[in-house]
Image 1: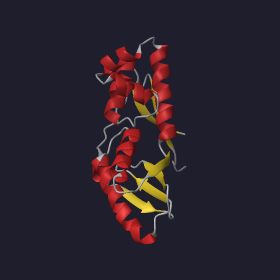
Image 2: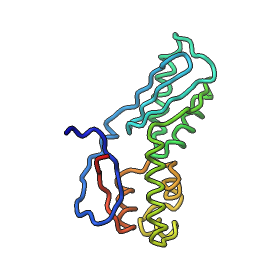
Image 3: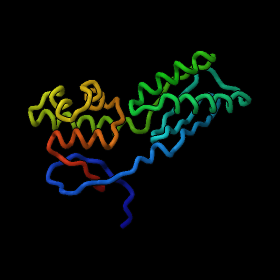
Image 4: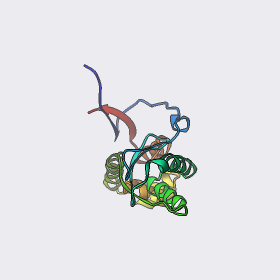
Amino acid sequence: MPIDKFCLVLHSNIKSSVNTKNAASQIMTKVNFLDSYTINVVARDGETFILNSYLPVPVKERKKREIQLKKSFEKHFSEDSSSMVYWVLIDVMGTGFAFFCERSDQRKERDRIGVKIRKLREGKGIEAKNLAVMANIDAANLSRIENGKYSVGFDILSKIASALGVKVDLVEI
């Protein structure tokens, strides 16, 4: 039976570990217009954003805007996607172009993982600031992770899992 979906979970009693390479640094941001208002952006970590311009962008200007957005997304790349989109917007507004971010394809997963971390933490009676200290991460970042506003990397997720006494694993859904 082919495996077509996986889910990242945090749970206890798993004795395996996962070795990963950071492939994100090898992937470049891709930007393309879907129509005169809608822009598809795939960030270097694979997260997809749909941006909508406030005014229609003429065909002859689209390539210029694609290049501008690509450079700005590369310059401001961050695992905190809200912050990244904000700084890209600030960059391009100075050129007379503005957009709003309609959606991000990984938001649901960030929310789900954040809720799971919070439930595990609360279930163990650990305060957020204490978990941050135990995991050796910034308390503000832990808050953003638990609120689904930060795209957590494997290394940080592993630190949090270890501090909670659980392991990270992939399971078929």
